[in-house]
Image (spheres, rainbow, N blue to C red):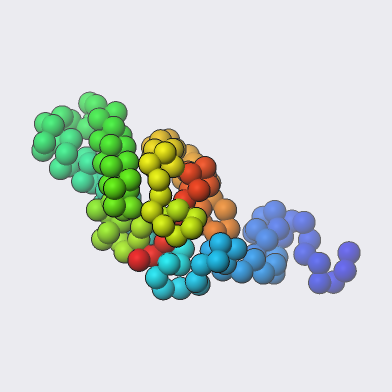
Length: 153
């Protein structure tokens, strides 16, 4: 083993970046800028958008409009979230939370995503687990399956 080669435990425990391997910035492989408009959105913006959308679905729609208790009918919140997400991302490329966070969902060519990829993305996002598994470009399983990415506006 040469002196410059990382030990296998370094890459396993801390990831390849911790071992000194340069993977570039998120989105570089996709031809996106490192920062500014069109760059891959960071996790802070994505989580903020999700929290805003979830609060709108839970408090405004389910509790105030539908007059349902989310604790008694948790499926209602997920159903409302799925409908609003599919409609807003399908029509405008972003939800209310995305708009407030300054991000949008884009197809890999940079344009608006088509309807079928939006539906696939929405279904997988509602399952939560795919959103928790991501690649070095900060694209979750739901992004990869639908050929989309979340970029800054």
